[in-house]
Image (cartoon, rainbow, N blue to C red; front, side, top):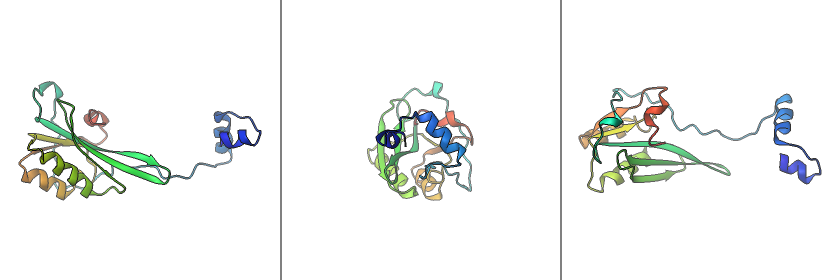
Length: 158
């Protein structure tokens, strides 16, 4: 809006534009991303990951989903990271927040022949879905989830 007004010969600062829009009850129309939609898992897995006790790669892998804003919508990026080496083991992009692209990223990481003792994530519905949990259990990997409202539990992946 500031750039548009400047082209029209009206010099104004961003704060003034925001103030004027607020006074009129106007706001920008765009979709806000929502990457962590809590799931309703039938099981609960406590967060017991203590970074001070980690000593070697492949003890704990972690994952998270982030968004990449585009002109019309978002792309979603999921990454699987080894917490000790900080190595990105796999990543996958999607234009929708479905479980499938998260499963594909997990399968890509496991295809390397490596396997963690523990897999850590937040409680997003994709990462706490029955399919995702079943894949981890089939590989005999312990599951740990961040507690609700505990943003620092998953900070190393973010």
